[in-house]
Length: 323
Image (cartoon, rainbow, N blue to C red; front, top):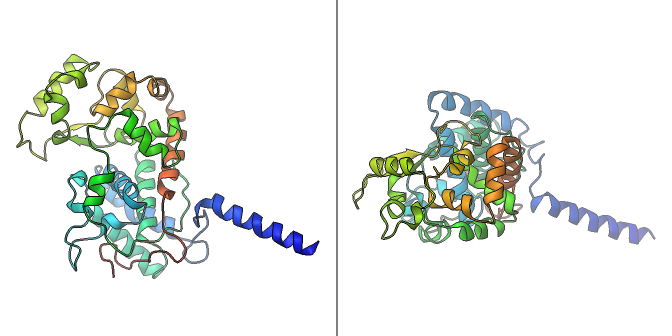
């Protein structure tokens, strides 16, 4: 009888471990660095105050890191020492900024908790703070990720990050493969409520051989986009349009804007007319609280997909260097 109880208890423990997310937990640093979340938050506050664009940059940085080979801070690795073709060499990472912020916060954490906290966890916490400081939900995230010990080639993000021309089916497939349901898959794209879109990502939509991608777009908005993003192969990487009218606020204006025929990217517009996603887009445009709830759940699922834990990977002392 005693042996049976022990076996059952062991099975329960294993099941609980998996439920937490393959080694992640909400109290991972309780003993090794209990103040880590305060360090990250306090380190970021002056940056958010002096540069309101940093919030969208950090959120996008996290998304691009997590979608390639899991949240392992590989996107932070600089070229050099045999890593000349790192992720940042990918054209899909055009406009990725503020990687140095994560390194700066990491140095603050290292000063109090040497070799305890991964760059991957700091990046997730920084993105979580970016959402909260701009008016979005404060998302509780499990921690315990470890950093990659190698830098993938730029070919990996080239293959895995979706292009600006991606449609609804492609996007839904990407996020459902990460465990998200339909509502969460639509909500995770609400991250577009922060920041900008580079004009180079709109050339095919605005000046393609047919106007199919402009159907449903409010005519005045189409004219505005074409005026802002001029046609041509030499379109400056510095030219851009705002994703929605409140680019520094995490709110549901992305959905409100899209429902009015002012979705910037192809996916923004298609989700309004696609029968699978139209009702969710409409609901989020009218109910910000439900969008926040679904986005929080999607954020956690993305942040724990394919992560390194336990004895996998390393804890980098410097986020931009492998050793």
